[in-house]
Amino acid sequence: MTNIVSTRLLILGSGPAGMTAAIYAARAGLSPIVVQGIQPGGQLTTTTDVENYPGFRDVIQGPWLMEEMQAQAEHVGTRMMWDHINQVDLTRRPFVLKGDSGEYHADTLVIATGAQAKWLGLPSEEHMKGKGASACATCDGFFYRGKKVAVIGGGNTAVEEALYMTNHSHDVTLIHRRDSFRAEKILQDRLFANPHIKVMWDSEVAAFVGGGTPEVLVGLDIRYVKTGAISLLEVDGAFVAIGHSPATELFID
Ligand SMILES: Cc1cc2nc3c(=O)[nH]c(=O)nc-3n(C[C@H](O)[C@H](O)[C@H](O)COP(=O)(O)OP(=O)(O)OC[C@H]3O[C@@H](n4cnc5c(N)ncnc54)[C@H](O)[C@@H]3O)c2cc1C
Image 1: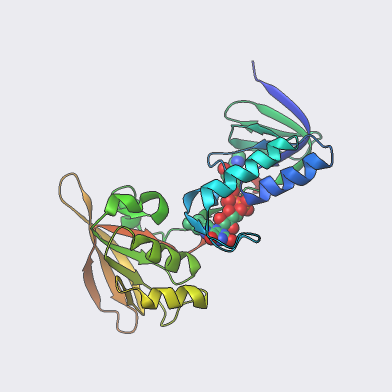
Image 2: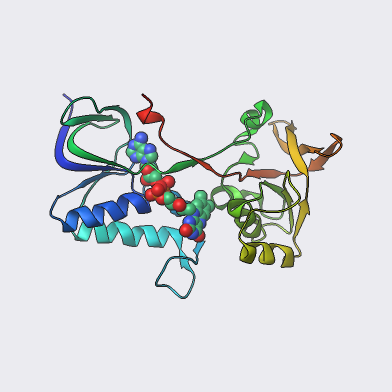
């Protein structure tokens, strides 16, 4: 029999947005339920240093911050549910949400499902996922200790990921398709001051190249956008850091 949970307010997602909503709702006496999803704590649990959260002069850790937010939300009366929602019906009331572990009926729904990392969309990238192609340096960087790595992108995420990877590797190449970064100036200053990072400007990844048995990433075919010329960059790991797209497929139509 399906386990049905009924609530006045259901909050979908347990990142900073979901936790903030939960703290306000619980303090308003709405007894909210947070469905945490497959990434309890959200994206900040995949990073280390956070230095722009107001109120902390020193650098704090993303996973710690999210534990604190969850503890505060629970302390003021939020109930956490360990489930992932894969179906919603918003045409009737109460709203009906179906998850892996049960069904939820909610008078009100707060959607705080955040975002997912974007990929380049190359067939060779898909093939090399888990064999050297990653979209999260803080999750997978450790596996490339002492190896050659590349980071792809030009915004804050790419520059942060390149800087982070120098904790593991002294041979980090940042590949960017333009001739300047969009990243914040303070991050760019740190990047240019770091002797372990070199930048390939006006360059994009044409293909992820595998080799060996079992197959692993051995390099990237890099296209110089001004001439179209392709050259091989030998790397053991490649981190795609080109931003995020909203996790809203559940609400299509
Ligand atoms: C590596 C990295 C470093 C970062 N560093 C910083 C930083 O230093 N400073 C800063 O300000 N920002 C930083 N950010 C950005 C910050 O993490 C995000 O802006 C923030 O996490 C967004 O919060 P959110 O609550 O909207 O969503 P998210 O954190 O994306 O959380 C989404 C939540 O929704 C849940 N969810 C999704 N789909 C479902 C579903 N179908 N059913 C149930 N639950 C679902 C997930 O499990 C997750 O709990 C960083 C991001 C990354 C990836």
